[in-house]
Amino acid sequence: MEMAAGEAESAYLRVAFDRRLKLEFHGSKVTSDAGLLAFRELDDALGLTEMAGQVLADSKTGRHTMIAQFRQSVFGRLAGYEDVNDADRLGHDPAMRWIVGGRAVTKEAASTSQMGRFETEVLTGKANLAALADLSGQWIDAVHARRPTTVVVLDMDSSVSPTHGEQEGTAYNGPSGCTCYHPLFVFNQFGDQERTTLRSGNVHSAADWRSVLEPVVTQYRDRTKRRFFRGDAAFALPDLYYKYTIRLKANAVLQGHIAHLLKRSVGRPPKHVQRFYASFSYQAKSWSRKRRVVAKVKWHSGELYPCVGFIVTNLTRPANRVVAFYNLRGTAEQYIKEGKNAVKWTRLSCRTMKANAVPLQLHALAYNLSNFLRTLALPDEMESWSLTTIRDKMVKIGAKVIAHARYALFQMAEVAVPHDLFRRILDMIDDLRPREPTPC
Image (cartoon, rainbow, N blue to C red; front, side, top):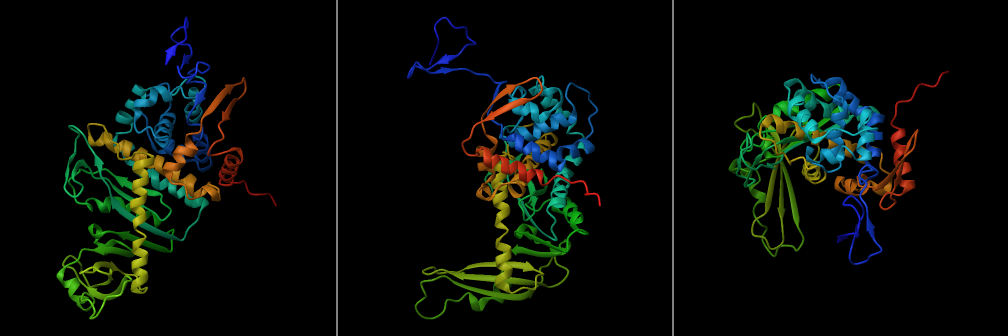
């Protein structure tokens, strides 16, 4: 690659393999993230970032409003930029400028230094950090107003966020085998992230579970008729929950109840997998009373010992259906994996715990906005897309921007999401807008 002879450094570039090609860079006239405009439309239809403006306080004045910088933080992460290091470039990106709104439309969005101060000084205040933690639930309330539900299924799980250097709260986590933070998440059955908190790396998987789960349980107490909770063995503390299925770690007492299922039958074993179920009462030392435990024993052909699992539950359905319901808890692990891949929510690089708690909440909000689009406004042929696919195909739409006196025209590339498909997405988003009652 070389410069054209006699051209200034700011002119086009040329490549050697074909001299007919010329390369020009117009960062303020083209964008690689034009698909973000659909997410901004969904945000406007549901009034999501406007909620942030009502609960977040900004004691500092500057060229950009608090809600403008909040949008830049969330939508930047939605597009895959996991921190503010790219803010200088994004500040000139036409899609981001229109998403941020205000003075950014005609000038530029916030710079890296401005965004750094916003996230590490403004949002780390005690009141703002608490408001950020509550925002996910408030956003989900807005979604439920458009998609009413009488049943909620909550899944709780922890994850790891690898750390580097002298980050406050970082510690070695034995089960994960790395130095990390140990965030805790709660999801509902639609994949929405209800609440999260950042914890030190060496805490138990269930540490601080009440502070995370209780606000969510309270939120649904008077709004849903049927409430369920699923968790692994770390969360086997069922006193708070309504209907629950929670995995138990095996012990000699539990295995004694199913001893008859742990012996291989006499004769040649069948070639297919054999599954057996049992149900009995059991009381752990930390429990105030006996509870129902369901056991599943699975014999594989050629294996000397069976696979055994125990679940404590207050469901009355048959044992095999209890196990089937609990097994759906694996979707929470998939949601965490999607969050890691699509919005990079375990990439936390600040020095203090408080400063790292802010991007975790912003990542979670970006994840929710993407998931809302998936569950509310994607046509049938796109409903199986993962959040990573949505980012790569829906967000990353290239566009040339032509500015006119009264409007701007985004000439968008038609590759993964052509005109008709994008129009249907916008139509579905428009259906979510509140309508004025028709006069009689």
